[in-house]
Image 1 (spheres, one colour):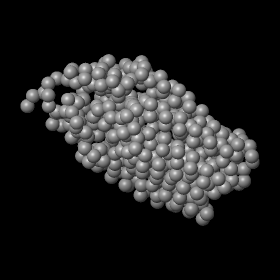
Image 2: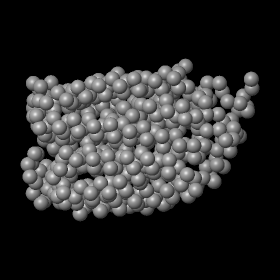
Image 3: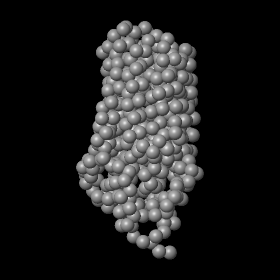
Image 4: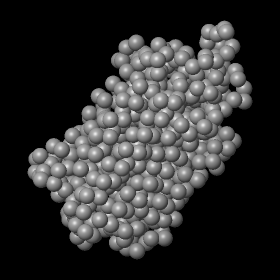
Length: 468
């Protein structure tokens, strides 16, 4: 048995024992996640505040926009996932979509941060709405095929953790860089709304150009497995029915939803906690950095631990550790800089494990689907998980908007104790509950490494023998 010549290095059949995907290939694959991580985090961290404090849009209106965009995701994510699985070109199934995402991502990101100065009222609201919908849709065109491509690089149980661990590092590095951008925007607030708009416009243009280059490199340089062509689902309804009837996938959907409900609080509420609870808004980037640096540097530590104790067990541990860390933040008060940094570091350590293992486990579940149906539909599966991920973030943005609105929040002013209590509850108690529930659900996950190895052997036995 030999590998097809169009496969990327490292994507050979599993019978090639000891072969790992080369680091050079993984680096090319992961490159776009740096730009995407920057964009996603800055939108999640600062767009709500930019809209309420700079553009003058009400928190409830922004919450509604984010909530409605998640309804649209219920359409766009499955469409991209299904057609990505069904695509047949000389470039493969996934790379044409990554290439096609470049212009929409560029345009939508600029639109978000560059509303014309003379827009106001309903016209401004429409502009921001189109920008939010356009950005998340364009990112879906990139993210679903890109995640699918990562799952296709290898079927090895633990090498997948390595691939997605490095992807997590790339995404988080982009997020760290976004903190510098957020620092520029926060600094510009002292000069007034016009200066914030100017900085936001220039920053968005630079980031959009760099991200476009990052997207183009893997789209043009990677190759895909020829044996996966024409093995996508024939019917979109059947494809997503298979996802929902796969008992392992259904459980992971629940875990993904509650986990990301919890993690979304960090990006959505941190700025408000820094300014209105701790009283040091200028240190918000430090608080987030305290979370992200451990998340990056811990990945090499978690990989051998996952081999020793198993992906599921380590993921459960990470959920519980994150829940404890966030829950302890309920006791934050004015000036508690050291406390939030230490707790954020523990949460970041746990996030390094979760960000590495979740997509790796998801890729294993997709192999179960191939075993049951004979199809390769990574797009349908990752579209479902991507929708769940974005839905949880959108729900938290919507909930935050309405909680701020109805608790009596007043932008750029001292807050009442009721508002501070609402912020601490959103930031600490709610995610703690989410992570504990996620750990309990994950404890029921039944796809073991031994069972996955058996499925892989059976799949390899089904592969036709190729001859030179």
